[in-house]
Length: 97
Image (cartoon, rainbow, N blue to C red; front, side, top):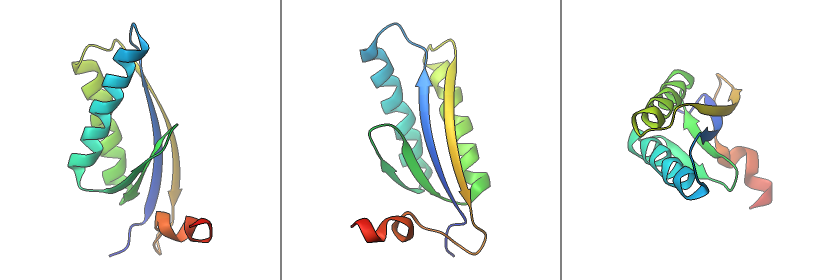
């Protein structure tokens, strides 16, 4: 079955240094990786491909992990493309590849 959603997320955990932020973002990307969804990391956000409910649950898990790792709060900027008949990252970007 083809994915019905593309979700891009930029997660911004509050931390005392840029180095600490980068480490937290690395942990967030590990959560995406372990979720089993197709994804691509880009300089300002990561795009995931899958079922909308599952992708939103992944984002929720990322936020919770940031708090568990010591961030007092986290901002998640999210963009969603929901297309029930199916969508892939490749389909949206094929003319650029």
